[in-house]
Amino acid sequence: MALYEWNASTAGLLGTALGHSEIVLRNAIDTALTARHQRLHRAGHWLDDPHRELDQRARDDIETARARLQRAGAPALPGKLIAELTFGFWRFLLARRYTTTLWSGIRPGFPHMPGRDRRVIEAPVARLHLLRNRIAHHEPLLAEPLPDRYDDLLTLVGYVDPALRTWLEAITDIPHQLARRP
Image 1 (cartoon, rainbow, N blue to C red):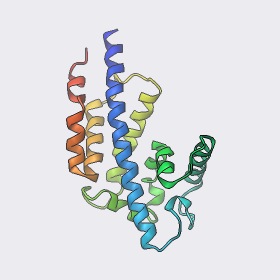
Image 2 (image 1 turned 180 degrees about the horizontal axis):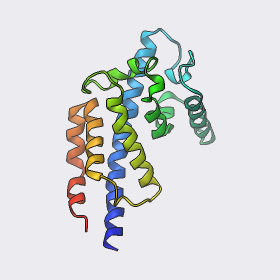
Image 3 (image 1 turned 180 degrees about the vertical axis):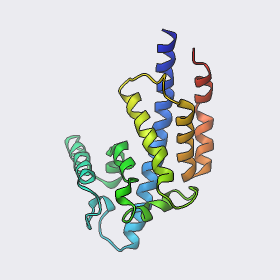
Image 4 (image 1 turned 45 degrees about the vertical axis):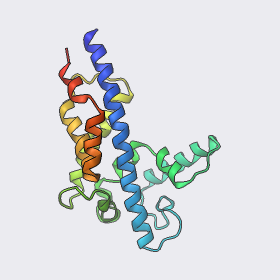
């Protein structure tokens, strides 16, 4: 029972921290791609994908998000649409398929990331996506390298802004929680 309780508490703390990091990730990508869209003098919002740079899965995700907003009676404004898209949507914008198209536009969203290789950010985001799914499906975290995932989370946020990393460290009690494992 002690392990079960520890797992549930840890999942809650990590889930909260992952939520904050997802918001940082999606806002960084959106800000960067919005700037790119404007630099290229394109009308509308980058999610409108006027040059069909997004793959079919991404376009489907956007349409699904729009439909959810419509069913809820909410306008499909860019900010609402950004918030409605899944962690997976943002994770896959960092995939190899976008290296020659979107990556150069996304990269400025992570001004503190070393180098230019998209894999530097894709790898921790992919691992966090898997952890987020484990937490969302109430799976045990006992075999997960949680200190490494916490480091991934802090690294991701720090790539956007070191002050956000410091803030996230200050509001979470994850290291203490991990140390309390029975």
